[in-house]
Image (tube, rainbow, N blue to C red; front, side, top):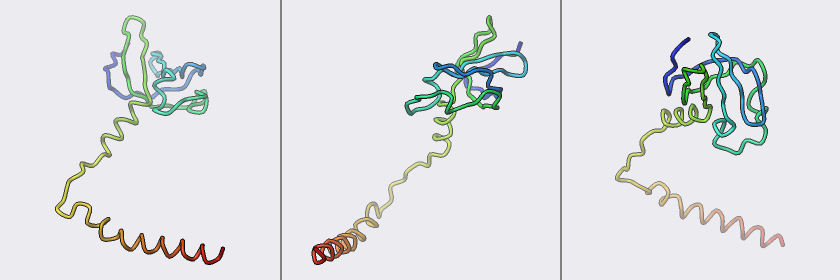
Length: 122
């Protein structure tokens, strides 16, 4: 029996799909469940849209019940970790919104011209 730590990443095989989640089997006989609420930040209408039986799946461990050798898994938290890793800190510069400010007059003029042309055609 392997001890799984919260936050660790595991790879397994999809062994079952139910309306409420995805069952995952790991190589050493440990099983886990990705509950429907842990599949995506978006509304999940059909669990089968996210995995198929025998697919290999990567998930993050939320909890491990050592007594029953069962894992509580998440796909959603993997995406959150990826977002955090890809998030670049926004740094304020002296120019601030100057780029937008400098382009605004041009964009307004282009839009006014487009509207004017449409009105002339009517």
